[in-house]
Image (cartoon, rainbow, N blue to C red):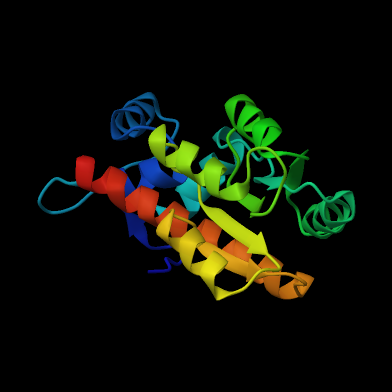
Length: 193
């Protein structure tokens, strides 16, 4: 649900936007960093515009990272240029092994994963991700047909892109998958609280 600037948020909603704990939001209210309002029942509420203003200060504005794992340098180039131009940082790996290494350094928002590569192929990369509980969305890519797509989805891919691909459609799909993953993570955290 979209909120207008004069709407109010709960402590947990403000915490999600600010990327901090609910306790931190309460402490910031006590310290005067953010103005709190009380409902008739005594519940804390925060004006959307105040939360957004504070978020611009405290939330890191880093670009989301896309990890491209593909052995074809021309594909990596096209993907790097396309995603850089729409505000993503792109990390490249020319093999499954280097891709797994890259995951250890900075977790990406999404992995674009070629299936057919020498050495550790895309299927094996997805098996490792599952085995080690890595919860990063993966868009599998291949020029091979429906059986590869079916196997990719069985191994946990969030989607499948057929090569050759339309770069605009790929960017739209990537954004949708990242957004769905972000919403699912927020819901999971909300359920834990």
